[in-house]
Amino acid sequence: MSEPDFPQMNATARHLWGLGDYPKIANVARLDFGVLAQLAAPEALRFRLVTLAEAQRLYVAREREYS
Image (tube, rainbow, N blue to C red; front, side):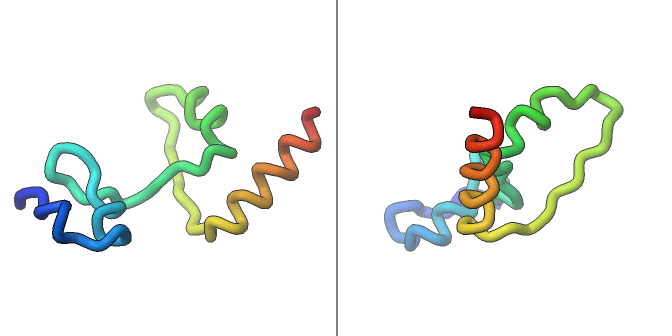
């Protein structure tokens, strides 16, 4: 599978492709960067679908909590 021709793709389709000819299947919300960075090698990782609005709301709430 080769990477599609990006100039001819719309923004949504372009967003779905990562580096190395592999489709991007998930994003980590900025809110969870700290948790992800602290995972050790054998620990499991589970993704949960959230909307952009929900991720932003949770991020703002956490920033208020720790400031």
